[in-house]
Amino acid sequence: MLAKGCHGVDADALAAARAALISTSPLVHCLTNTVVQTLTANVLLAVGAAPAMVEAPEEAGDFAAVASALLVNVGTVHGRSAEAMRIAVRSADAAGTPWVLDPVAVGGLRFRTDLAVELALGRPAVVRGNASEVMALAGTGAGGRGVDSTASADDALEAAVALSARTGGVVAVSGPVDVVTDGSRVIRVGGGNPLLTRTTGAGCALGALTAAYVAAAGDRLTGAVAAHAHVALAAEAAAAVCSGPGTFAAAWVDALDAVTPDDLRRADVRDAS
Image (cartoon, rainbow, N blue to C red; front, side, top):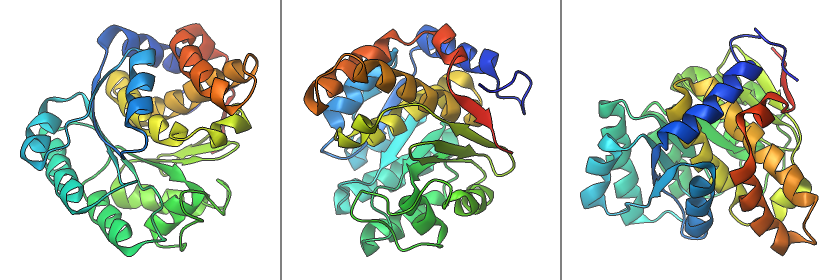
């Protein structure tokens, strides 16, 4: 467990972030992919946040300006959704709305890669992806196998630090042990369960949860770490009661709802700076 006083992210800060999310119910504007919208909305509702899938370019800017946080996920991007993402990011940046970039499958396809690189210029509070995605966005890798990573979170640490310096925000790299950095501090989040990798949309929902936590916590690093710890704790609880991937998905949403501030105090969070 992370020792108290460790670089400003400690057990008390994680617990406070969970309490703040419950009390403030942040409104998260999700520009996400079509495969994961229902799970993403259910995950946000389970943890106490409020989801909104406002996708039209004609509305995306107005809504991003008033939302508590914005998620931009390029998983099933096309021309019209890319337009909405550009508008929403500009609006969020102007309004001070924290936003999270999830560069799904970046590196393997030029359109989404160019778009993600462009969007990253809009100062995301957090970039959250797997190791291959983060390395590709940083310009040090060619991407993974579709949405699956072919590199480890540790492989991507140098790229994550460089990307953090470029964006001015936090970079979170998912893996068996997640790595979260603001460019100077490095935090590792353990726990979880391999069944998360067999649940469609779990990582994408984590991006939305990260947006909610950043809005609630008021601190990017604390929010990103809290979101990853929350997901890991819930995965462990769900795996203990499920019979396979199908029942795991439902049990995981239930477990996300049940995570308390005190639970986050006990999360496997370690300073690796």
